[in-house]
Length: 326
Image (cartoon, rainbow, N blue to C red; front, top):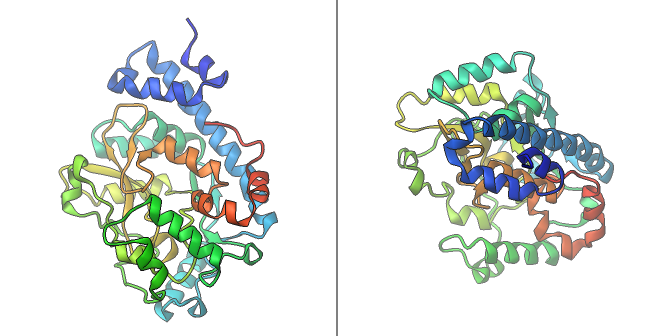
């Protein structure tokens, strides 16, 4: 019988993950477990290859990783600008960091805190990939600023496909852009602020206000690939003793990635003995591996999907040429 890993390596990537996910906790029983873990690790080996490939390509295109664009000229409050500068001095952001030497010890501590296992996908990510943060600034020559027709059309298309309550295409098109920055608790530190009612996995709602989405001055809808470090995830778990259901924080939400209103996380609830877990509050309504697929399809910046046709798809295709399928 062909193994899951053999099928995966032969190209049936999504089918293999779907089959393993359908097994639920049975994926932890042998002989399936060793095969499933091998699939998870091979998937994350490919994810790491894709990340290491994309970083120099994006830089060559003029994409600027990091937070140098957080300035008062971009509409940020002086206190926010100072906070960013302080954090960047203390611990400069980098687009990718490999796993730490003590990754197995940290994983053991994390599973002890949650009282059970991580999804195999997440464990393999921490073992093979580490931390990633593709937040940055689009090249100005791409021409996507709030004043351009392409940007407005992209936002119209985006809102049509992500219909937040009380936000309509007409309202976005007819309203002036609001540059007000809404405060959040610990900008840049992304404190854990998931609402208590999010402990019920079936009722997790997107935590941001719909109106905030439509009126950001800057074109920071890219939802860049971002996975917090294992150390940060463990620190946040230790602050969740009051919760009836724990979660691993995967990334800051779309707004707080860009120091806008927000301060929430995209969580995966734990413990979870399956091969993968649903990534809540992130608007693609998918699992962790599904999220990675979306990110790599668009060069680590999945909302480029809404700009590519207007800008000319060839440049974006060149960014993703040769990336490995997950």
